[in-house]
Image 1 (cartoon, rainbow, N blue to C red):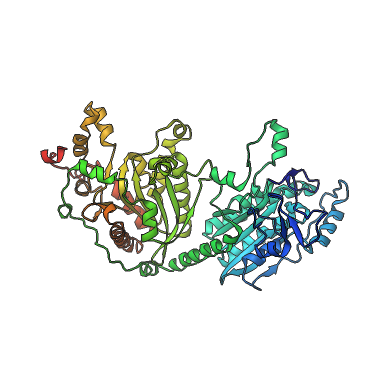
Image 2: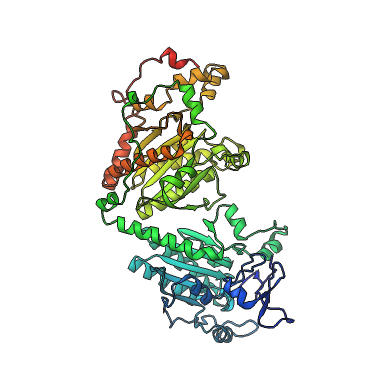
Length: 593
């Protein structure tokens, strides 16, 4: 890992710049990670990535723009922007002299670029900070460039891309530099309110006032591998708290693991990833033209349609249904994503603590309709099931889901949730981080969102852990799934005082799709292949797709106010006198194992 230093130019505690060895000619570079000698032209062809160890060399801002944008599409604005020495500041040299030196070195008047461009024909507004200009520190001119770019994006309703590389605040401008954090954050806030996409690309390094303002406020946060990102730099932290920092601290991988980033993308993937986001959001903007536009974008399907007749479903003992719902081969969210939807782009992290793998979230298309998909994921192998906590989410999983729900509402995208969980994780860490609060907030948020929401229970629907993703407009169940206030085993232990009475509890709880349809908890049942979804996953997926399309086609034409009111009434009836259906006693055959 490159060493760090404290710069006197306003860029605090950043990794050393990469430079060729004195013993080498200008045609060779030595990789600071593996120390291999790399021919410069080969390095350039490889986008500035070491071919031996994949270390990402720093790029100058214009080099990066050349890699990301269509040729000759950049139209620069803000040539008049220039730092102002408001404090008449001097350290080892006057600030005005330092600015002039940086201008000669970089050919930039402000150390920032803003303007417009295209990525594979998709238009965007862009801005970036040049690290070679006084360490990329954020002075008034740089903050002005970012703000002007955000204002242009707002005025034209064009997505914004900001590329950050900064050591932090411009100390030579004092509190004027500090105020750029508020100024740029305000500008980004207006974009969020207006539903204009903002992509933030964090490169090596991104520190201080930049990371603590606009750089961390993107709808999508992307970083390059091993990029150094943080608030206070490592040496500042060590000097302040006298504590040795963990390996890899404040690198992109560290932040990703702790839920702070959506994506860590190798340089070769950046252009494709940004293009995909732009294309999907361009489709979302088109859909906002009206309900008919949304309905027309849904695909034709050839699966078996869902049924609202409980007698149309083959009768199975409830305990048998529970076993089928838990079958290890049963398709999960990722399998359905690969067949039912197109162009899925997973987004990660709750931006607070971690990236819970028990919940998968991201953007996709159903036909040509952009949607947000959120679902439980259990895993297949033992190691994957442990990594995904057997589909039992932690609070950070629900908060990740809520972040994507708000994303969907901001951009007018329908939401599809796929439920398959034994329940929310009941561990100590989950309680410490507010499991109850996370579930409660998720239910409340879903109930008030002004976009259509369809939920499909694909396997287990365990208690509040399931309901946290199921407070929706339409609730569908696969034929051999179940939905219950508690697991049969838990009910048997508590009420029947015998865990072996789980089959009896399963029947008593009336947790199968037909009974829940009679109770009006469920709206429709999605048929499965005769032996269960795992016997023919492709056919099961076709039925799922048909059910989702039919539900969304009915919902996307509704006014948002009506949508929210209907959702309120849907749940308002349960337990209300005279409105709640009552089931007959359990059949003795159903109760037996």
